Amino acid sequence: MKQNHHYRVIFSFLILMITLSASGSALASTQIALGQKHTLMIKSDGSLWSWGENDYGQLGIGSEVSQHHPVQIGSEKWSAVTAGYIHSVAINQDGTLWTWGSNISGALGNDGVGNSNVPMQISSDQWHSIASKGAYTMAIKRDRTLWGWGDNFAGQLGDGTGLWVRSEPVQIGTDHWSEVAASISQTVAIRSDGTLWEWGGILDQGLLYQYRCW
View 1 (spheres, rainbow, N blue to C red):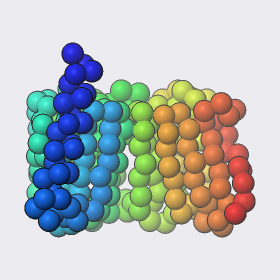
View 2 (view 1 turned 120 degrees about the vertical axis):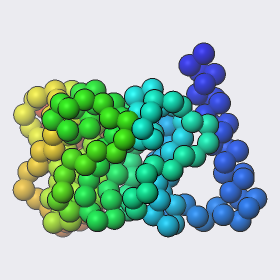
View 3 (view 1 turned 60 degrees about the vertical axis):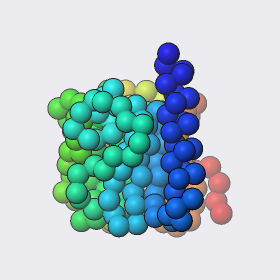
């Protein structure tokens, strides 16, 4: 049943893309993020939309009812969005950071408050970019410092502590960063000096390793 539902979600996504293309609105979206079985999209007007499985409120629509067609999330305007397996993270156009969905392993960064089926602000600081996968998130502030929270079983947060869970954002070192990407248990980032770094996965205790200079 779960597999069949997954296929239905994928089918709905394909139908949506065909519909947008047929109507000439394919360029109306500026960002798309895929979770395990849910999708998030920011349109060109800054509005945020979601559809797919919603058992943990990961769609952010105020309920746990799954949706087979896009539903708008509130009326706020957004600049960036990313998705973990069953949680979602977005940056508002005012620069603030918001999360919703499942808080397993501290994925929402709300210091253990619990799951949320609507976007919940977790920081009033100014944020630049975000990357989520599994049950953790990495984020770069506008001052280019790097932060992470959530699941840390393989050291994917890069904090070097060995703690398996960080339930609120923690700064990763003191360097400045320009880009970050997340996998299930591995993180890769580009430092402001252009060097490439990775941590987590099979690497030792989440310590940062320089992989290659470009």
